Length: 446
Image 1 (cartoon, rainbow, N blue to C red):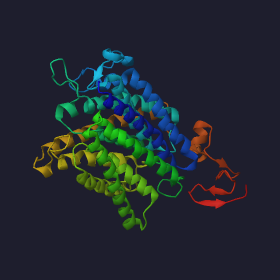
Image 2 (cartoon, helix red, strand yellow):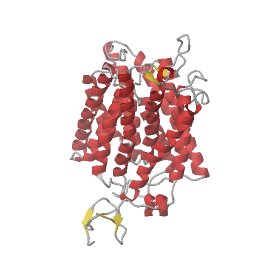
Image 3 (cartoon, rainbow, N blue to C red):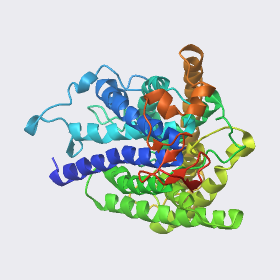
Image 4 (cartoon, rainbow, N blue to C red):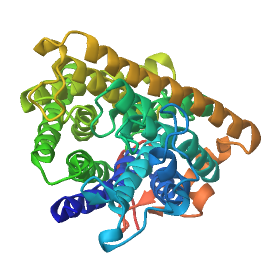
């Protein structure tokens, strides 16, 4: 056992766990005041549910013995983490770290992937139906896809028996551009289509973010945790971790600049929401590529992702799907860009060791990256669409119009995030500052 590597992976797992509360702040600030608690509860609900499912069957399905030519691990082999537990010299190992440490690290990836999807259905989903979807989706989609991408197990003779995308095809996805971001983004699009548009979508300003400081706080926590997400995926305190760490720093920096430039020329001003969204877009894009491209190429990738995602979030108004908090525009688009960029700019001197088109490697790696990206996109979208439709037709997925007008916090959780005056407007604790439903502020008597 490498104690340094073990310590680094444990710390990285804690950093990635922090990303889910960070996501709750990020998403919560972007919703209306009367939906912030529900939005945050969707993240915490995913954390609670997926954490349990991971111990029961998730880890076994993702990293158990393959039972389908790279499609899924045996869900019963390590049920309840059987065979994983142990201490001292008898502890099962995953490389140079105890396997139980690897279990914890991968668990928090599963949790945040599910939580990411919730941003597409803000203000209009039943909380119980969301949890039902989240649990089934984790079992049917995330756990198998994690096996496809992340499982590099071998048999006793050293023969590969892992997932068909990562180990089988040789697709490079260091920390989850396919398994996390494309996967969640495709599911988010399916949910947005099934649940339909929010009342007033595209017609009024009532859906503006109610608390931009919360958004900025959430983005900061996400960025902080992302160093564990990417650099922790090296599974050791090594030069590879440092390589991923620096790329995780510089790509979102460039993406912020790219997003703000788009806003400045398109809208006439750069916004805090744009800065926060640009940072996340850059983080998403560099996730699959952080071990394969140089920091200079990470700057280029960040600029491309910031510009492309800033433009992509507007497509929902043109194409008529209500992706409330831009999960599709940021995570699906950013994930595809980052995954494909590996095929273009992979440096043979990088830890990944692949050779992209720009280094004379031809189109081979780019083709493999495309197969991996779009296979996950298609699988996740189709299964999510069918699952969401079945839930909608049976137990119901969307709240009533009356409940949507009242507010999902009050109708789903019997709580409100802020004090309200007689007209139903949230009051500042001092009793003077009021934020109106359209996001503006005014002063009233206490």
